[in-house]
Image (tube, rainbow over all chains, first blue to last red; front, side, top):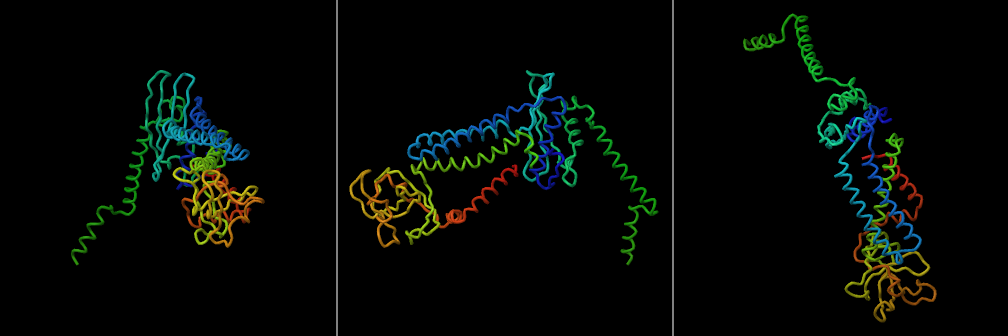
Length: 225
Length: 172
């Protein structure tokens, strides 16, 4: 599994690919059924183009160029067309799609991911449909990879799954255990701040002098000289 | 990386990436063939018989259509001798008659004698259809790689293997 593999934390493509691989695993482990239509279509177009090329190679090799010229011209045209369709499919239909799946109850989810070249931020577009005929609701989620990769480049599943479950309502509904509410997060942050303050006051107590008082004393000494 | 091979769809996609690189290269070559009407639109000079015009390793671009005028004396052409697979780059020095039946005689600029010796047994001249193209452009020296590859065939295997491995292992 990709999640057990270490990647270089400086390699954005690796970070993205590992995360892209983990996302379907997680959603499939909930009750989503994955739809492979998009990638199957891409494979079909690609392999058709490849088959045409293989056929061209065969007749060119066995019958020579002169006698098969017209077929070769046609094959080149069709191959170019198929390659164009494939490019169009990847850039305008798939658009970085990572997962499309449905629940038995009729809800549908579609996830696409992208990164910008030098920013370690995973950008998700999650569209959910409440039922087959419902209008889709799109949500953008942007999180840094460091949230679910440790310093050694190991993928840590839990925070990633919590991130998904708490930022997408539909996933949260399927996996309520992993939902981390925002209030809890806020409290944690507040706690941290108070801890800093406590630490500062502790330090001050142990030295006997408060940090804010020491600087003016030094200044006074200098001004006297 | 290797984990991608465990999922059949990933494996198929990786294989397709590799296949498409190969097939696109082949189809571009064939496209060039179709446009220039030549079975081999790019050739590498293998001998020094056309020096000082072409050196060993020069890359030549061929055009095999007579749109404006017929192939004429002074043109540098590439031809195949019947029964031999190696294309030869030489200059047309004599021409008798017109049209597709015209008799052509070729000679390498750096050779003392004309090509009658090189032609097949019993063949004294070339006709238009023996020619696979006239040289229209060239890039010096870059073709030397292919001379290296054909003189040391094991390099081919090594290069293909490395390329294949790179494509399968990389993903981007």
